[in-house]
Length: 107
Length: 117
Image (cartoon, rainbow over all chains, first blue to last red):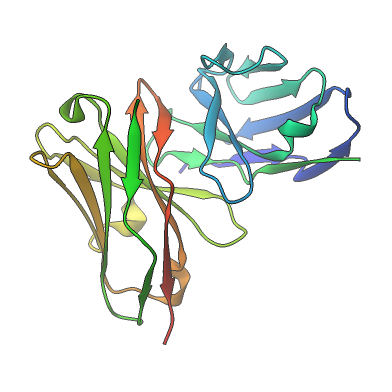
């Protein structure tokens, strides 16, 4: 199975800050990576697909980049509604696997 | 609008089975594969498998092979996930999620399954 390692596991930032989350795959996954946002008590929501494509309706302050084994998810200006846990997910191989999540909080 | 509505909370004893349903609406049911995932309390997401509602073919994660069965009923646009030989570690929120290209674009609201003696 492909292991996905996310960091940090949690972070605290101020409104307006730039926030960056990294995800590392245990092997080359090309750009076969998605990012999801999950708010407490809710199902996850797709934010970024194919490593860098913004899902329709998602604000442009969210971006993704990377290829191969190293990926980055960025919120350019953190907003209060962005408080959530974010997960990366690979689809290079089955089983589909997720990172452990990054919990984003407001300082 | 696309909706996936799952069945309600379940409480089961160890060794029992559970069958969770996911009723789709707002799109052509047979045109999109459906995944099942789960999330243990306070934990991350785990992929369980996928079903093609058109032909009924399935693919399961190795760790659930032999314990999970995914089926569908095209007459009601519903997919089902049955997990047998339940143990306490199967306590989790179970989600269905529609497959669009290589991502999960719509999710059910989740079904909490608690396994406890």
